[in-house]
Image: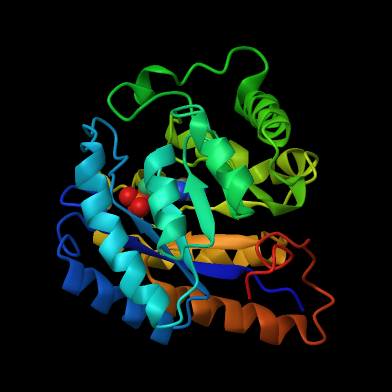
Length: 286
Ligand code: PMM
């Protein structure tokens, strides 16, 4: 059975929407990473830049100082690490420190040099659908008559072409629709309903829905459900995405996610109920 890989989130940031400030200190971030691994995470995604709507970017040195020490320590303990960055220099330093995956929410648009860094290293690359930095991204939610699924498929397809042209082995690329990035709540649901269209690009999918505001909107009772109270809905989504054969789930609550995956496994019995293609698994990251 191919169950989705669980990517536990370690945001070494003072300002992420979901956990800003909790793990901004290196010791706390490492401790959190250890806990996520103990809870069943297959890999850790370590990031030093918040991408919440309206967030301002850290300086390059700030981002480096946040992520590199944490990556170094967790890699030394045997963790498989992904760096969540849009910057070529940060990706290079993270790979040097032992990261094996570059998770670029801009899919190479923010800093095209990142593609050469990844190509030269042979690392796995996650390319997310992205239109603009956090300060303005919610000004770019117009998907015209074609609609969000077709636009995201086309725009991600163009990124995949650029990624391959830069010398990255397509077998090492995962694609991500970028839930919450230049998307209105309904866009996220349309994308989740339309995953087949994105799969037609021929690459495995990574999905990051954990704690996002579209879940808060879904569960709103006059006001959106608070960030910390969206996990039951997220777990339901996780189970359904696992059945859809999604390759990797980027989540905050690893324990709840793994519980949901255990249920999916049990129901699938011999695994025939779960499909899916390589991706992080195929990329050699165990
Ligand atoms: N979301 C966030 C950050 N990085 N990376 C990928 N590949 N996909 C995502 O959906 C994604 C990401 C923002 O969420 P957070 O602040 O909870 O980490």
